[in-house]
Image (tube, rainbow, N blue to C red; front, side, top):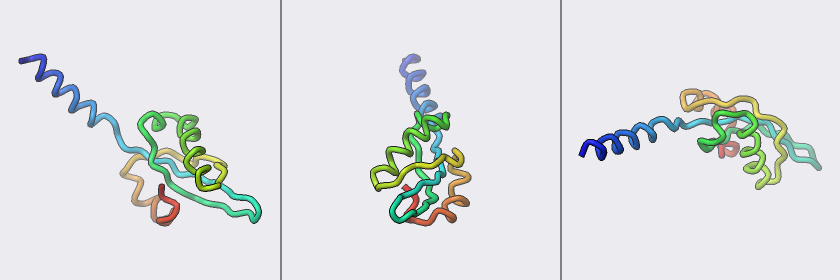
Amino acid sequence: MLSLFVLTVGLALAGQASAQCFADYKAKQDNPLRLQYGIVELPDHACGSRAAASDYVRQVVARSGWTLLQIESIFDVSEFQRRSANAGAIHRR
């Protein structure tokens, strides 16, 4: 019974430990040149590393014909509201 309790508590804490995170980025399209600022929600594996975030975002924006220029920053949900006002609805993925 005790080990079931420990397992249940451990699973609950693991769920809380995975925090939601986002990256804001700059991307471009050529012919004609267009620039984009956007925000992407990152999976857990990409939250702790700018390189992992870049790899993930590069794939996401490429599906829409954009080329990633750079990751501006990685941030949590507390910063999302402020930054998303700058991105506009079309650029939040």
